[in-house]
Amino acid sequence: MMNYFKMAYRNLGRNRRRSLLSALALSIGLALMLFIASFYEGEMRSSMESTLRLDSGHLQIRAADYDPDKLSVAWEYLIENPGQVAEQAAKLNQVDVATPRLIASGIVAVGDQSAGVEIMGIDPASSASDPYRRLTSGQFLTTDDREGILIGYPLADSLGLKAGDQLNLLVNTSNGTVDEQFFTVRGIFTTGTTTYDKGIVLLPLSKAQAFSGAENRASIIFVLLKDREQAGALAAALESSNYQVETWKDLNEILVLMEDFSNAYLLILNLIVVGVTATVIVNTLVMSVFERTREIGILTAIGMKGRQISALFLTEASILALGGIAFGLLLGWGLSAYFGRVGIYFGDLGMTGFLIGDRIYTYLTLSDSLYLTVMTLIITLFASLYPARLASRMEPVEALHGSD
Amino acid sequence: MEVAKLTDVTRIYKIGEVETHAVNGITLSIKSGEFTALVGPSGSGKTTLLQLIGCLDQPTSGQVVINGMETTGLSRNQRADLRKGAIGFVFQFFALIPTLTAYENIEMPLLLSGKGNGKRTQRVKELLEDVDMTDRANHRPDQLSGGQQQRVAVARALATNPKMILADEPTANLDTENGEQVMEIMKRLNKETDTTFIFATHDPRVIKYATRVITLEDGKIVKDSKEA
Image 1 (cartoon, helix red, strand yellow):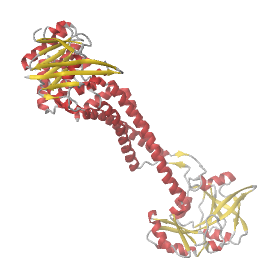
Image 2 (tube, chains in turn purple, green; image 1 turned 90 degrees about the horizontal axis):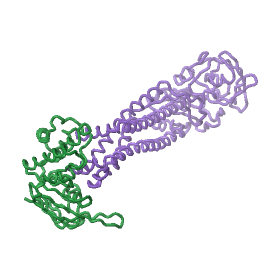
Image 3 (cartoon, chains in turn orange, brown; image 1 turned 180 degrees about the vertical axis):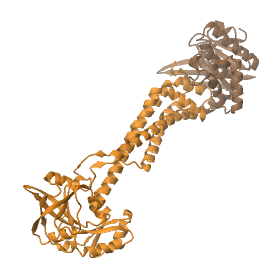
């Protein structure tokens, strides 16, 4: 075995540049796949994180007739005594936080400019409101603030608003009319997701209830769990005739579908990349077989069997593959670590159905690294069976005449 | 003792529609310890005959028996096994593995035969001494002259103590001095070890070493002289 290794290593050294370039092709292929995997993982994590923390939560308890598309605050769509319901939900062991939220549609007007927004009444004291606490200016809301409003940075930017400025907010009320009031911009927040921040304004829940005429009602109870995988079981336990309970999977069907679709898409992409790089290795080995026909003849003449010649070429392929993989792993890890730290800025991608942060931070998992490494190695070695077989099947006489 | 026996052996090569009888109905017996030259003009069938005796090729018809074993029905692996233990080769071109040193080239057949490390080392050292290449043991082929490479090839051919060594134009690419040196070594080893040597050549300076000269023409034996 040691002798195969020694011979294979020296054979690769004969045409060092070609061997290095072949291994490098494999390295770049693997690094590219690792980077793509880490980018995708980062994107999915960002998307999942943003969507769950900002939009859907892990569970939502809603009135039986609630329709999220209408953004209506008509009483029949709302939960009564939401504080009590949230309190009961929060008592469950699996629940991290449960907080009522009122969601209404409205328009922000400043001078002759206006923008349609979602008005969300939140409990400023709840930890579920933490994603809004990152302020570019001003202060966060307090529970009893009656005139203050929190707006997102892109909305403030487009309307030319800053902390302390006044804006006119119109709301579709519970009885189907429109009400309006001037609010003072208490603070300007950024969640890092422009798509989300440009279309929402935040009021303290009690103020939103009073302003919209919802009184002591809320649209949803927003629930975050200690472990989101328990959502299904908990939803079943909470389900009743008065409420519908939706899990994060129900609420983010597009995101879950996208994850499945992307996995299939990534697999195809990976197979293409590995296929191309394996072809480079195979090409190198096939060239090597044809260059060394006489040598194969000599080895056969002195008694080397076909499988031993195969083993020699497979050892060469293994050295190329392992060398290429080792460097590719370093390169891929390096790239992923760098962009995991500084991120890649995309800004507002304008996608609907799920939220993605403006900056995507790559995230390379151990399982992705292992999976891609093993797949690259297996496919490369599998492809190398062809040149190995080609060499092993050479008739000694033909091989000895091969390079005369 | 008979090391090779060929009975009515024919080897036909087909190129397109044209059939060439490279070896045409040869019957031949080679005894242990012979130092036999196969002579004849180019295309007379010397190399093909050597390849058939060496089990590198198989006859179209006829029988080839090596060390008492019928070889015509053997598989590729069985023929490889037979070559490994019973036959050594020296080729016209200096057929060494370019990435291995002189020592490693000689060691290769011993490795393939599964010899232990200690026995291998001892045998390689003996052979290097036999061909006067001890001081060049760690040189690679490209660091050796043609004559030195051919001496290493002879040592490699002898490594497993085969009964028979087949040499195809072993001096063709050597100058007179180196050619004579290689022939002297082969002759000496023939005498010392009783190994059978069969070499194809058309060089009259080489033929003088032979104890038997077989002349071929158009794939047939036209003359077989026990003494040159």
